[in-house]
Length: 243
Image (cartoon, rainbow, N blue to C red; front, side, top):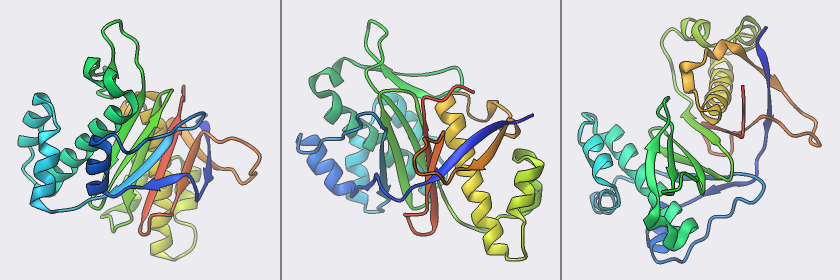
């Protein structure tokens, strides 16, 4: 039996941040990022200006620069550079002088983290990107986030068969509206990926072990929150999840 993954739609609490303003204000110490009790969720529209991308490159560490140079597709390279630069700016803003004392690492499933020399982790973060947006979650506990642009997919039913339960597939393909099928697919996909990233396993854990359950009671907490606030996209996030 799959584990029920309670998911709730929300349309507030997501901060859309301009990249250039983030670089200007964040590096100057003029921006704060609050995430008391709940994760801070940030969406950053991607920009293609060469001068802005160069600024982002200058913020990367040597390992990240090497990884960026291995990308063959310019769009994917820009997403990587922008996302990691934004993480550096946000962490520097949150940690202040302590930022210079943190080290970056990756878990066995390649989830990035930062820690001090004594092994403590002062902040948790997670990053996702698509063609148009960078999405970042900051929190005191492990977090996961995913953003996806709603787009046509070849063999949608075949993909669903690999990652969704039978009841989820039935819900995705309910009715005859193909656009609705895609919307439901990306809603479910982002919820599952956010949960798996919060858990730290990513897709190393079979996504069919989770089954999306819609939660409409506003008084109850959910395991995953999702939104369509960013036009043409689904964004979902989860925190402190043990599956």
